[in-house]
Image (cartoon, rainbow, N blue to C red):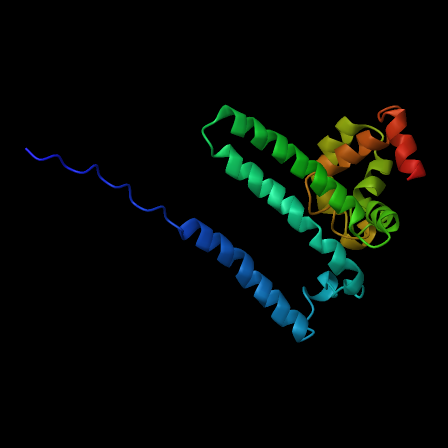
Length: 193
């Protein structure tokens, strides 16, 4: 009886790569079209303007590409069978997390000013710090949070950040600003820049 050739495995599907690519390209094209026609994003109270400092932001945005490459390399290594490759994937993934955090902190123009604005603005993460400043007892705040949602207004809160999120960020902000809850060297680094 003649030997049969071993069956060939079916070729790998490119469907996932194709759909992921489309999920990036199509929204990006839509945003470029809206930008070229000066159509703002959002409506009414939630109107987002196009950045007036895009010439300053664009060069810094390019530096996220190597960070993305690190993360992609980590995913690729994680699919290998070798334990060494998998350990390398963990190391590469951690390196990409550190690089992404550094990029997010340093990429905006006048990074420290931008970050302080974000951390103190009621329309951004500052809303949680403002809310945390009102908290005297965290257990009481958490138990009264649902009723607070029904009685507070957007105008009184200065925005919808706290009203549209679960209380977790306020809890985080509360714990971060409590005296003695942050290591002294972290506080000094944040204050001195």
